[in-house]
Length: 185
Length: 170
Image 1: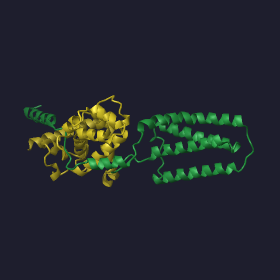
Image 2: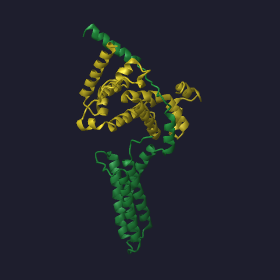
Image 3: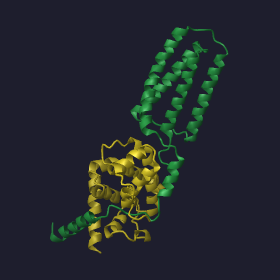
Image 4: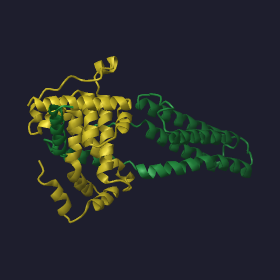
């Protein structure tokens, strides 16, 4: 476990993020490492919450940074780097989910995987996070994208290939389930 | 809406606001990332974007150049250079087929391709065919042979770009 990665990244050389970005765009892997130290916990949080599985989240988080390394030359600073990074991460997570749907879900168009039981890997998470992990998959993804990542329902509908109304309904469903869970604590 | 419902909604809203934006992975992920980015040559996405655009212009200009070359050099008699061109065409087809097989030989539907990529591919194919037609008339034209080689390479690069798996595990 790294200690104080943000402090390490920002103060080690007294360089700000835009400098790391510029250097990484020129192929500097050390600069890219500093960007990783700054952002990987937020990217991992997105992956873990969306996938509800620590092992998959770690693999996908790595894939995100590998792809970001490939694509960073395209970042022109038109949005915040963190916004761009999370957009890339979201697409990679959703791509992973689509590719790893099991055959039952594919053949029978089953919307949700079964509820996830609390596991050792959930130790240390906030109570809300633990309840989020137990949400049905679609409701969980919509909830995270809307309430945590700040996407609009129109954007979520496009990302998840569902109707806008379905996105809203899943969000409402997620809220209901979370409220019940929090009440029953 | 009763008080209990309002209370549970407020409790959830507070919990969302307090949600930590960061979660630490249980292991250091950097070594795997470092290994992957060191082994893979960086995709020159930005440059490719421009190079594809410039290649598109190049491909379009190839057709015009072919016509010019044929007009300037006239139409000499065919010779054994025809065999060289035939070999180039055959070699290209083999390489293209091998590439498609290596990517699973799945046809890329037109809908899956962006209009830009489709246009680039169409232009390159058109340019390649134009050069081959011109070489049938002028098989000793070295400029045309170089152009054919260049166009074939561009087409293979573009196919590689289109078919390359987007998901790569570390």
